[in-house]
Every structure is written in structure tokens, then in C-alpha cells.
Image 1 (cartoon, rainbow, N blue to C red):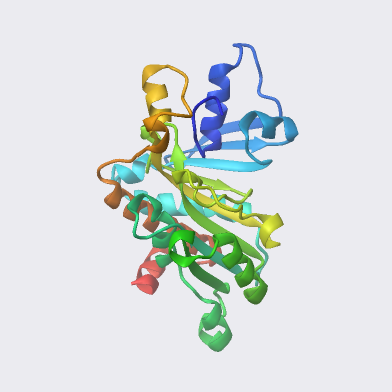
Image 2 (cartoon, helix red, strand yellow; image 1 turned 90 degrees about the horizontal axis):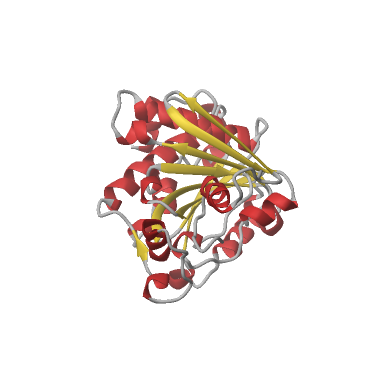
Length: 294
């Protein structure tokens, strides 16, 4: 799209604006920007088929949160950021009391830019077995299952196949899928979280798209959390030079990632994991999560 690649709806909207006439309006798309507890929040809603066509993304809600206060290590920024993400996630999930959730960490933990999903899963509380076996102690917790799907190259199983089978057995009311994404801009890499109620295509962040995970494929709503960890080299070159992106040549098969990607992925995965816990379990605090996941 536009010769430049991105998984972020907010960037797809920016790219459309750059190519549109000055007075043009983007059909079928609404956008709103606000600041919540010091964190920038941009909501893009794709409302019809025209918006889908222009942004090349399914109809639904896409929320982008800038995490600069957390990355600057401002006072209380981790707690504030986790609570902001939890509030937004809760709004997309629309869960009822007693609803069960499956949290799926997508990606390859052995490849750092692709490890956001698995590392987030390791910060997420699995409670389904506890609420069933010890209700006297865990009655206030929501039944949650957690899985790291791995990748086709190491498991021989598509993430969509695995999750469909698990959904058949566990019967969750909703799936939360966490994965790495691609951005058009280095400024957003490991500095942004996207939440969406449209599901996700595993592997899209590293140019290896697999079967989609959404309500159609899994039979239940799928809310996706993603952190951009890479920039497509051809997209970066196009942005730096102002020239249209190319679909061939050496840069087309390369991705760019920051040199401190290991620390950044660990930081962002912890933030996502805590946000998921706060969103799913009423009354839980950061201190509670610290104790339970340690």
C-alpha cells in the first residue's frame, strides 16, 4: 500500500493523507486523538467498505498508544501505562462476569524482534485451573488460559490451527492475541502499542503472514495487542529519501530493528502482560501482579 508497509492503522491513515488532495477526506474512517494520564491515545475507526479499501485493513477499532512516559522512566509511568492499556483493552473486550479468556502469545521467543507475544504470555496469569480447583481462594479471578503458540517453522503447526483446536476444547468467550508488528517509522518502534478488535495476521510484522486469527477463523471475538519491533528496510529508505517504495531489490527482503531491541522488547512485554492482567481481573493492582507473577 502506497509503496510503504505498516501494520499500524494510524500510520496507514497518515500515508493516505500524504497521498490525498489537500481538501480530501478519508471515506469510511473516523479518527480521534487524546491524552490519557500523560499517554497519547489515537483511535481510528474503520466504519465501512470504503475505509477498508483505502487503508487495506478490516472494519473495526484500532487504538494506538504512545508509551513515551514509560520509556523516559517518568515517576509512576509503568503503573499509569499499564492502567491506561488495561482500560482500553477492557473497552474492546466487553466481557461479562464469568466470561473465560484465552491469551495467545504469538511469535518466536528465539528471535528477539518476534518475541513480544511469548514474553507477554509469561507475564500473564493463568487462572482457569485455579478457579476450577480452588474456588474458595480464586473466586474473584476470571478463568484465563495462556498459550505460547510458537511458529510454523519450529512446531509444524499453524498458529490458527493450534488456537482453533484449543478453542474447541477450552471454549473461551474471547481470545487476546499478542504479536510483534511492523511500523513505517523508527520513531514508533518499541514506543507504541496497537489494540484492535479485528484480530491479527501472525507473522505480518516480519513479512511472513500466516492464516488470520479473527472471529471467522476461531468462532469467538479476537482482540489483538501488538508492538512494532521492526521497520521494513524498503519502507525506511522510502521515508528517508522521499522516493516511492520498491517491491523488489535487496532492501525488499530486509528489516531494520534498534540495537537495544532485547531490552525494549522485555520492557514492552512486561507492560503488556501487566495490562492484560489488570484488564481481566477486577480489583487487581500492580503490587498484586508483582506478587503473583514473581
